[in-house]
Image 1 (tube, rainbow, N blue to C red):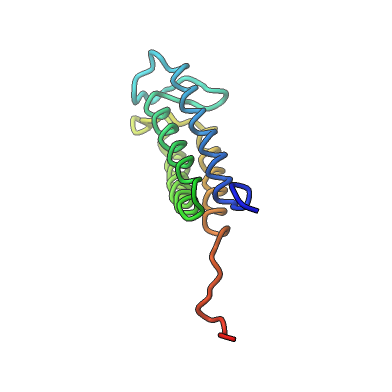
Image 2: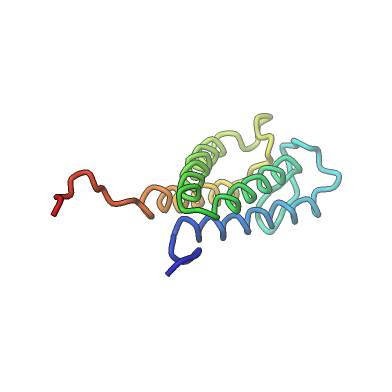
Length: 139
């Protein structure tokens, strides 16, 4: 078995990358007239977005898609983006309704970011681990 399906990290990076890229691009279609870093965005389904938020989604989508080409890079990028999303999810709980909310987060965004963090960190840290060969006996 080879390709994306042989690696949970590659598959997750490809799927999340495509989704986040698509969300970012669709976000641009609905945010004309919204300030670049406005604290209030337009709703995309139930998520609030502004142009800066769209750029972040596009950048994350591209990073994940590019990383999905190899197991090591997919694992590293999944873990890194998962950690960032964990931080954004936690910080987002405190900045909604404040001037610090420059990517127009709402409650649904926080739930999505925390769920993404759990999946990306879980797979990034647990899957595709190389076996420890340092303690194996030589035959």
